[in-house]
Amino acid sequence: MDTQRKTIVVASHNRGKLKEMEAMLSPLGFQVEAADSLGIDVEKAIESGTTFKENSLIKAQYVYDHLKEKMPVIADDSGICFAGLNGFPGIHSARWAPDGQTSYDYKNRKILTLLQGKDHTCTFHCVITLIDATGIHQFEGLAQGEAVEPVSTGRGFGYDPIFRSDDLGITFGEATIQQKDQVSHRGRACAKLIAYLKKNQMD
Image (cartoon, rainbow, N blue to C red; front, top):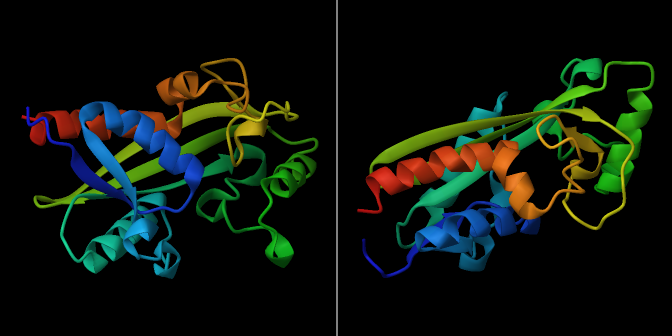
């Protein structure tokens, strides 16, 4: 295997996602670069898709098309679907809150209010798209759980504080990053991505 570190560009400015991706890909010899560090604003990618797969591809393709020097790009689209809310917020998980609210503390409190008296079962979804010299490749991961009152730990991000993992028996907000990576939607999608990279690009 080539000992020189290879660069892989992540189409995200979410520092939590970047940290998780780096933890998984760095041991394989990849240097993870955020798209914005290369002057590419991922926010300009218009997520017009109706599925996680479509929006993941839109973001990856946008960054790949704007790279001055072509290198592998990965993008993920992820979200959470609550059974008691008919799958809401789904692909709108990052941007559904009214009045431009971006705080996940607000979103988590609002979700728990909306779920009162309803099924708290929920599923995290993640689709990672890789675009490299060979084409487009997509990897999907799911994590099953239940919405619960948050426990303040300072760990995790997004909906992690209210998502109690069926696999771990604790919230993603309580889990260490190593525990979370083993069973999370992104961890499972990343495991498939890593298997692909090992088989096709790490020889």
